Image (spheres, rainbow, N blue to C red):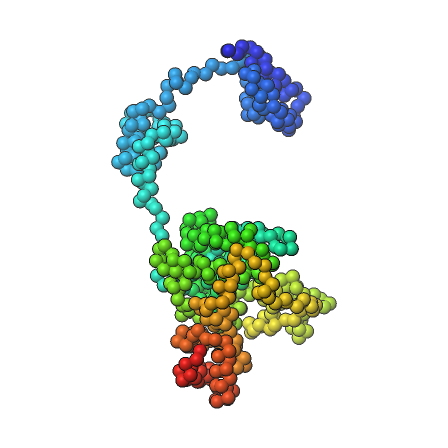
Length: 516
């Protein structure tokens, strides 16, 4: 049934009547409009809905212009079927033919061409043309053809350790056996060539300390990459991380923000991790974070590294083949590259300074009233802090307050709860890993040689290359066998001998005995 136009006009007037008070100011009228627009009313057609703010202002403007009820009468609308279309069928046919000739032509160019072709006074609206073209199947075929020439060009590293990719998996919730819950992420580093996971850590957030810790873990065991590729997340885009990559001679590959498809390799790894690890956690009791880390390591090493990759045609472990990068770095330089430097003035009375939330004691010989000093501290462990003297030498600081840490509780495998991932842990613990024995690799060899020589090892990049070349030839090594061989070398040639001599004697012992 048709509505009476006068009744509609009266209904509209009742809606805007409170807004016609002459004493209302602009702000008061705006508040009143918001109040009216927030209430649902019964319309003349019978439907129940609120009146939009824009509609109220439109009715108010019309009534104030003529000051009569006729101004609120509903205007007659021509049905869509009767109205003259904004875009003629001939224009649509011409536009489709133009797109099939050149699929890259924009709507702006098409509108200008239509205006010239059909002698129009002005080009048609681009939105109207797009609406008319969008219902045509030929339009979608033409645009799809245009997109084929602009598909993303994928890249893959030609060599292992040429490109490392870093990213964090979206956070997920873990419920522990004590009833507490926690949201965590998995921060990973992936070798682009082999898809091998160089390091994967369970962290609370994709923070700078977590990112630095993950990178150091991978670099200590495998060396340095040539290039580093990550998204524009704040940890990777921070000044400290970019500065550290520059110090270590690593090129950072630029990438656009909010572009996950450009990180397809590590995103595919995240999907596998979600299927094989995250979805199994409801069926696996987890005692604490170290237990969760153990489960993660077992899943990656037992499942991900051992599955045949669709593009590699082999497993990531076989493709990686325990390869150590030719770009080595000393542990000291790797540590110093990520130090967070600052300039602070020590406290006047105590001479202490707060670094990373920890109060550190500054030696009295370096204190000068109201004079700022340069400091550096480790973002991963703020208790490791240094004073930088005039010669750029790092002087280690001691905490001003000694905190007694609780003794660490060792993880007993027999006490761990059993679940769907437990067999992976048993396999992970019981078999020989494809790299040097778990927990005994390049960092442990560096530490053993440093203890023997009573200095930092490697002290130079050349020393690092020498040790890595030696390990490639004679590794992997058993911890006890290496310790026994090193002890025999010291008894034979004595202390204070050059590193090259020690490695030569170790080589001789291994070649003769054949026991590694």
